[in-house]
Length: 175
Image 1: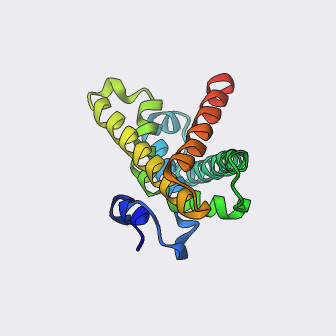
Image 2: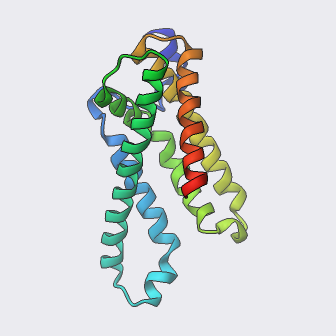
């Protein structure tokens, strides 16, 4: 194991290559479960059965996460190309998916905050979950991109920073 991968938080934050797409799949399920639980009063108020609501939330959650994965993955790939990267788009998507486990904790925290859960008394815990999950995700993504492209950590961090800046600007303007 080389030093960069060993630095990746004991490798707990990165899935094995055999499980490339499991990261996005589990992330979609985590997001769906969190939004299902947080919107319980809303779907009960309109008279949906719990099973139908769960299926609807799983479908919508998975579509949301897959669309975000493809969109942010495309931006990441473009920013890599901008900095001289040569990895193919599917390789970048697989790498992106493999570093998703920290978001399994961060996404439910973000869903709680998005649902105005901060007033519930544990908003600080949701904010901590979201911040830590996102931070570990970005560090792991930087390390894995460095390995994928054979880049220095600074160059890989530049690609990730450009991706975050572009995506954040897009969400701010159109979200």
